[in-house]
Length: 419
Ligand code: NAD
Image 1 (tube, protein in one colour):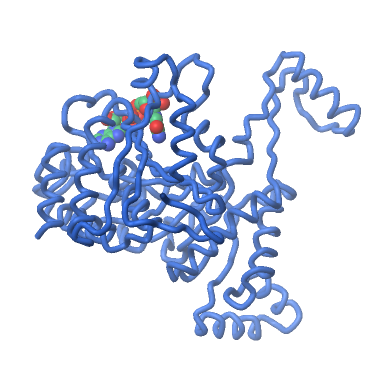
Image 2 (cartoon, helix red, strand yellow; image 1 turned 135 degrees about the horizontal axis):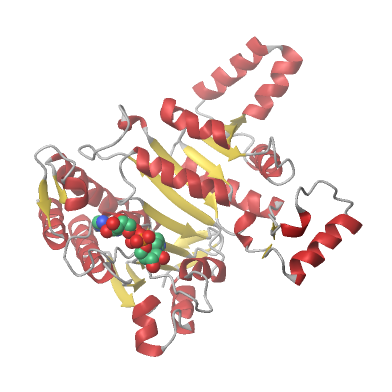
């Protein structure tokens, strides 16, 4: 069984992976994903490494079968087996659960949301040079305005909170106090540190040149500004021999002049040190369009991460094929997921693109350090897209694109993997 021993994942040759098939197009894309992963494992390891797929219930399918959107048994299974993969889930309307994804993240404390962003040749992109985009986003998943601490305008709770702000905290600048709703944005040093630590470790392991802390610290000085300061402090404290921070650059610049600071930076880069820098979120969004090659690993807060993930995915034409993972590097718990929804408009038509789910399975294989199988899948997807073959959502924008069904796309990938 998969275990964490001394902070490191110990992976047996046979790994049980619980999976939620998902609603809508889920039952079409999940079997294709599993068949492709099985084929890649067989080719890479000739039967010595295998996945045993174990179905667990959640979502509409679960609600119809047993009246529960997210049974305890499912959560227990994920807890026990450490990792899992999920198809898209219908968001319950008017039920007790706000979002199944949020419930899963909170229960397992999956604090890092990982979104790799890269371009596949052949895929239509709004950028002139999409090949320059190669980033991995680490979005903090448990704090910020998403903590759900909100009070609605006109309620006794909002009035009570307003009273506290005005009388206890002497707040005087609420423009329309009586018709305001309120939200609280907790951002902690601990929450920041575990996220930034994971981003730095990932960048070092995968040999990325930089980690960029993206924040709005110019406006929200203690929350977003705290994220920046705590992030830099952690980098210097825990990784001093492996990184060079732009905070040090600024200090050297002030004390010894800009030329000296540039020399330090140059030699740090020559020594292969990881550069830790920061940028204000709005400037970051501009820069990603103008000079994407300057960014590699991105560490950011929850709300910024939400906006950034979608913009970057759109830049490489991959909004429908972007993969995602939610991870707690300390406990080892990780859930890999398709980032799109249930696509009810095409469900049952064998049209859905399984790439988002499949690329999240690739992330899972990399997490297990079964990189040879992961590479085989990536290569097959690259080859398929380069031959202008894809499901309709992508093929219709390709020059002379050939539209494949969900299942024939899967078969094509398996043929490429076996060849
Ligand atoms: P959606 O992502 O399901 O669909 C948006 C558009 O993208 C549709 O035109 C759809 O056909 C297309 N699309 C999505 N996935 C595709 C795929 N794999 N291949 C080809 N085309 C694809 O978003 P929505 O319609 O806003 O949401 C539908 C349901 O999904 C809602 O219940 C929503 O709450 C839920 N949802 C779940 C998740 C998740 O589980 N991670 C994420 C987003 C939405």
